[in-house]
Image 1 (tube, helix red, strand yellow):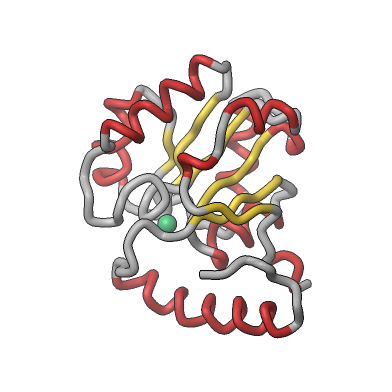
Image 2 (image 1 turned 90 degrees about the horizontal axis):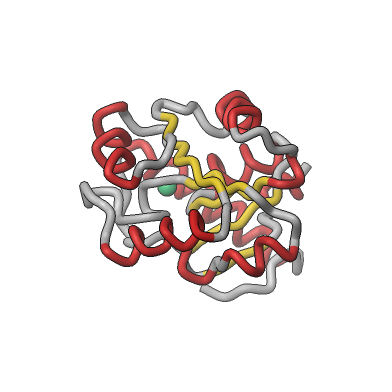
Length: 171
Ligand SMILES: [Mg+2]
């Protein structure tokens, strides 16, 4: 049960995730969170680095879809210039959005990686839906209102797992 909260990998940022390493694992698609994963939750547009990262994935034939629990306007304004498919109001950690997107990408569960900054939505949802999960460190330490409650629970889960020796990374 607790292992559902454990990501397969933990990295500092999306820029530590490279197409070559994904391909070695047989990954052909990426489902990524938006807020505090790609940019800070209060930043409207993609940064040049993020644009470059999306380009790199495309060049290596890795499909990327953004799945966010945030509202249509926020997700649309961010995603459209990147010419990347997106899902808003995704209701993570529920499996539905993850599964729908994998189907749309025409990829199997083991060909898709789920990336995000939150254990309770991205990691839990990704694991539960059967995907490989990568947790990133949130871009900023502040969060939107709703996320703040999740973070409190998340900190408890993480510190429990750290005590149990299930987590080896430091923050
Ligand atoms: Mg997030």
